[in-house]
Length: 246
Image (cartoon, rainbow, N blue to C red; front, side, top):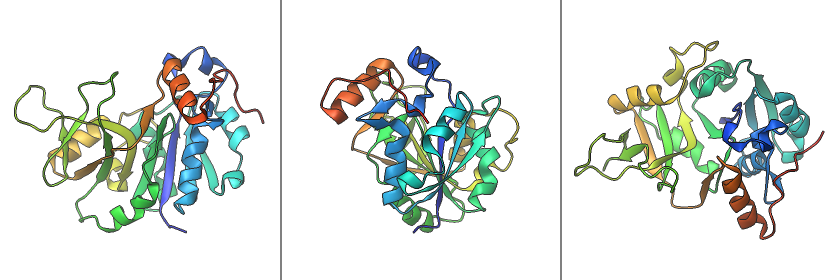
């Protein structure tokens, strides 16, 4: 088994998913016959990344009751409860002791992606000393046509330019990243903080790499996108109302 540890971000309220998320936390919404977060857990288990922390805020007790200690998925789960939610960087900063000073993998709990997390330990092993992050990027979906970041010829990531020109076309951040704890060294673990400003600061120091993933990716941000993903995975009529019960 890999010594790398992972975190799944599951603290969001999922406002755009209402009314589905009024009674069910977004990562537990079903797609293809299983909760969204279960796809992550199963992929991580197959990759040998079995020590996983899940942060939560909204209906967090439902997440813990549904997933338990992770044994059913072949992993060991721990939880980081947030009240209020700390946003991405704040939540990661709160969880830093779990990673024991080593590079770690973070996945958004509300995305579905067939990127192989088994690649993460090898990527981290090959990092130069000043590398702080590695981002998985995808082609821009219809709901986010301008993208987030660009990749240069050296595989380093940079913010999307504000104006057009000869720069490489921007790509969309997939919500999957590999990070060194030092990226969050100055982040207060008790205050909400977004991730994007930290990434832009690190990009200015050429400390962030990235890759374009050409496979399947869905940001499950609306009931319609959840239904489309469910139908694609299950090949049948979507069931958008059920939520795992303890």
